[in-house]
Image 1 (cartoon, rainbow, N blue to C red):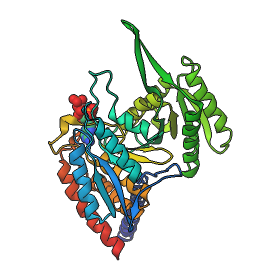
Image 2: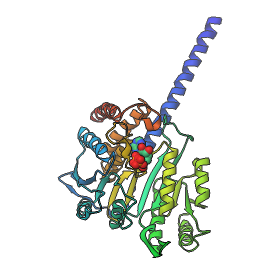
Image 3: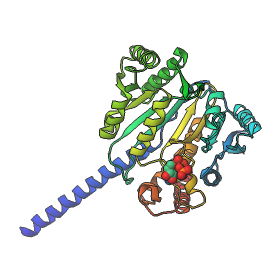
Amino acid sequence: MNSVMGALTKLAQSAAIRSTRAASSAAIQNDMQRFRSPVMSTGNALYARYGGRSTVTVLAGDGIGPEMLKHVTKIFQFANVPVDLEEVPLSSQPTAEEDLDQALTSIRRNGVALKGNIETKFDDPTFVSRNMALRRELDLYANVLHCHSIPTIPSRHKDIDMVVIRENTEGEYSGLEHQTIEGVVESLKVTTAENIERICRFAFDYAIKYGRKKVTAVHKANIQKLGDGLFLQMAGDMAKEYSNIEFESMIVDNASMQLVKRPQQFDIMLMPNLYGNIISNIACGLVGGPGLVSGMNFGEKYAVFETGTRNTGSSLAGKDKANPTSFIRASVDMLRYLGYSVHADIISDSLFRVLVEDRLHTPDIGGNSSTSQMIDALFRHMEQEIKKQVV
Ligand code: ATP
């Protein structure tokens, strides 16, 4: 009798183990799927494709940008990605005006760019940030960051899955500042109905397309009554056209507090430029920091892909310690945008496995792996993923 009971208990135990394993493998599949962040363009995208191959502009930027770009180049070669990278030097030196023109010409020709961050010095008030100049000249009005929890990456909160959508061209970033008299500086925050309309439309359309439930408009309309007031009013009016999407508004100070306290309440966060800069850095910090999240910039015609927090990481340059995840994910977003979703999935899923299955973590996320260890492991997983595709 005892032996029968023992056998039954063992059977029950192994069934429970199998079902726990199945549940955890389903959860991992879900997480891997989420790691393949969706990429929504604005509709009239232009990009260069000749003989089945695309050409994209690459701006390596400063700090860790050039070494990250080398890794991406090798990854693309390994995965046989039909994309040619046209590298254009864009220096942070104020004197190199023609560099900026060359970069703009190249992006206008190719339609798409992958970009490292370009350092902006604080000490020359006449020098316009190259990053800002590119966004403005190309009218890249929507900045999108998908910030979500990744298993095994240490963070204070779990189950975060939100999208930060930021107006990317105006507001405090108008670059219009002057000193009326010594000691009195006026900075103009410019808000236009036209730009609010298109960023709000982008956010609601994104919500519909990717099954998001709620849009939270973040503002400071209690103080900036006209500018942010207009943003808030227009976002609220537009919400009425999208009756399936829940809409709420939140003052930016409360939004910041809510974000660190209970980030799971947010789905899409929609906001003007400067709040977007700050909130997106908080959001990246919540899911593990600057090395993990990519950032996408869209206009009517062009798209530029970069890291979410727009750091140069100059103190990490040349040390083989930087987390390559955010840069690689930016390149994956770009492939998805160009329609190379098979290649994008191979790279994305392999990177996910490096982080989650192999637990190869660089020091910024509490590990002691090097960049190159991560890249080597990535190649191993890509090889397996490619074999699966071929079979
Ligand atoms: P400093 O501020 O001293 O010039 P930095 O240029 O490295 O250093 P930022 O580029 O502003 O600083 O980056 C902010 C922080 O994020 C730094 O601590 C940097 O090391 C870290 N960081 C940025 N990118 C990465 C990355 N890819 N992997 C790991 N840490 C990163």
